Length: 402
Image 1: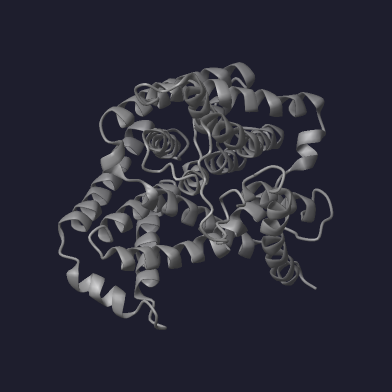
Image 2: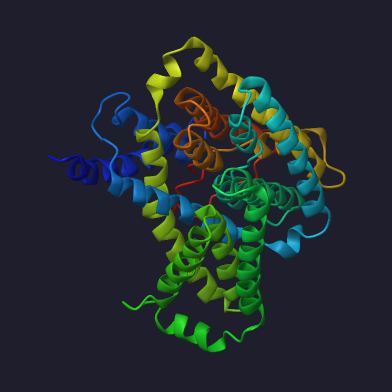
């Protein structure tokens, strides 16, 4: 059986196994399912059992899964709720994290790789946190809005930094190109806000339960279009994916609530039922475990990076704490703000491809991101007081098992 054929057989098995394992262990401790997807990918990949090998096809599908993850993150943000103080203070906290991260990078790996480390350490995994907040009924609370602001800046800011400092252009030219993309994105957002979407919403409603599925097809058109623009401009594709989610949210803002919920359910099914799990599984498959354990100095970096995420990204996130937050809530913000993985995977991939960092450092950073996803949301929501309400047995691939 070829590498691709075995992957087609084994990856769906792993994708089904992850929520089953998570649900079984959920009786004792609630762990985000992405952790099990990553671990199962490592187990089945070349680092251990060797059942699944990397391939160009699965790499492309995993890239699309990462794009879908950022699309869903952009679609979840409610800008009206985070505008003003939360956004300003979250932005200030992120700038502090970026500077501190680059300084730490120069200390640990002097040279151009310091920027890679700095960008990785100033990121927040909004796409991983939003379902957890939604399940805990926290999205519309001051605490949830603060986390949303921290996560939005913690995903968009690193994407801008990647485009400016890790591209093939000089910083001045890269800035002009980025401004060009911002203008395109602003035009798309303006049309999404100002255009009359009545006919569109009626057509979406008419095809909700038919083979047409116009809403889902339109999502892929918007996502593909803005990703294509970002790639054409030689920017990171995730910038386009994140913007596409914002545009789609604004288009559906004035739709009937029932239609909006139905469309959201369908898009989530496509994203979290296939593409996003494939990204996390394939990240595990391609995880370079041998590079991590080959040198004890690299292995020691894993807990160091995990702690640095907490210090460099988590502590400045406290600036966005709502007025009157308790000490426990501030520590919860610290832990949730320090939760990072998708940006870490993206920036370390660029770093290794451009030979800015070694595979060992990349594996230590990704491993630290895995630890942050495993530990920080669990501890943070426990400190805050998880008010999760069980309403149905529905499964959300990025959430904790109910």
